[in-house]
Image (cartoon, rainbow, N blue to C red; front, top):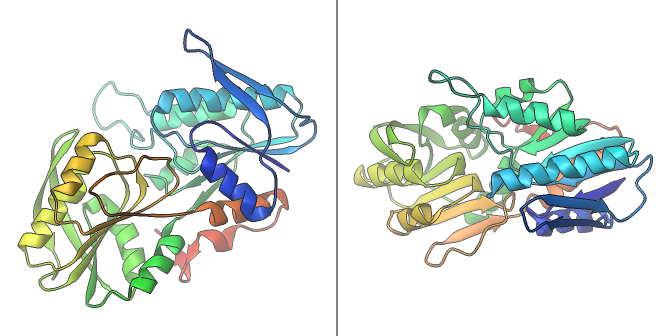
Length: 314
């Protein structure tokens, strides 16, 4: 078994390797002056079980192309199996034709991964679980929830209600509510533009309660901050937001600064800068991914890694 990393999140790949006592593989990834990517594997990989760690964080297209080129290089170097380890799977929000003449880009990315040489995929907290069905190769879908739950347990949050900031996140919120023995509430929203949403109603009792807002990812933070503002106006006390993938833009950072959100909990699936003025707690998913990689290599079950209190996390 050998683990390699693209340039998207080398620190996460190194943490994974440190956790399972496997050295990070040597490869050269560079860019030509015209923007083309060059990849060279700097060690023998013939007959090896290869894992490539690469999130499709911004710039998504650059990191995706880097992944494809790395897989092609390993395939041509006679690797026995190639697993794409994608802690964050980009383009996942484009998973259906919700308007005329648009691409189903999540399916396109799946096709390209297989065409480039992927034999299986390991990913975490997909935006839409049906994306697993876009692949004709094995997909291991992990959840950050167990890692986040351990942190929340230490905070001893009382009088807690778990809130989904939109209807699409109900299953995830319900899983957190079960695990934390908390009540569940839902915010109904209306999307005004790709970067702006409006929270319109709250279903559930949140007055005088501590609130945990849960979502899989945030970028412009419109959904989170509009939901938090509505919850605060309805009498919520402390508001904690919890997202697996934080791809915050400058607009998103500014919105969270000016929102009633007291803490943002996220993971290191994406390498991100420090956000001054924002209380962000980053939890590592490296131990979870490392254990999954080890089990995949040993052909043993990974089922227990994506089960959560007797059932799937969402």
